[in-house]
Image 1 (cartoon, helix red, strand yellow):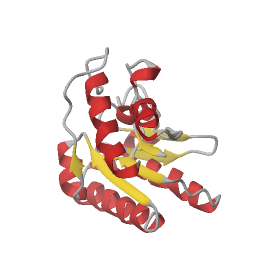
Image 2: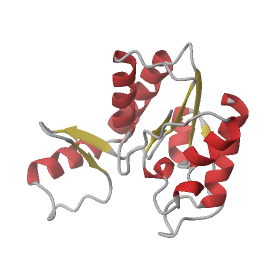
Image 3: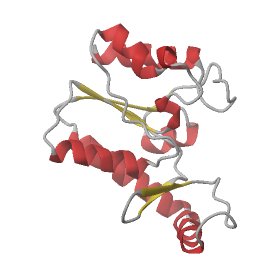
Image 4: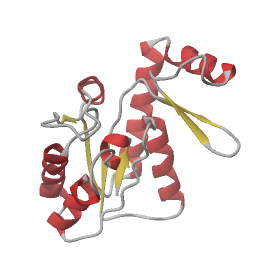
Length: 176
């Protein structure tokens, strides 16, 4: 299972270029892509908690940790993911106030990321578990592998096919 944001989901790539597709071919196993575009570290942790509660123990788990500045606000019907792209004029005032307050202090942002990482470390302590980030500041704080982008997808923001292949190969060498 692969957890993360749009960087792992494969935004801007053809299906056969995504990390999950390429990794599946390398290890000859299905790879379930649980990455959610625009989501936060806490949202990835939440999804892994659900997997644990359901008793789903995959062969291996890969966390491609996203940017530290993102957060998820859980609304009644669906989660609302926020990041630096939040435009105070385009969203509900209460949500933008929440995001501004949540992200105004690096100590809060960092503590939340470290808590989520420690939580998933405990979830998967008896499972193959890889962790990395394409975000240098996230990789440094969480003390995980930094995977640099070699190219970009069509949108010029997300990892391109060469980067996805590199991440799949990095993962495959450990989870196969």
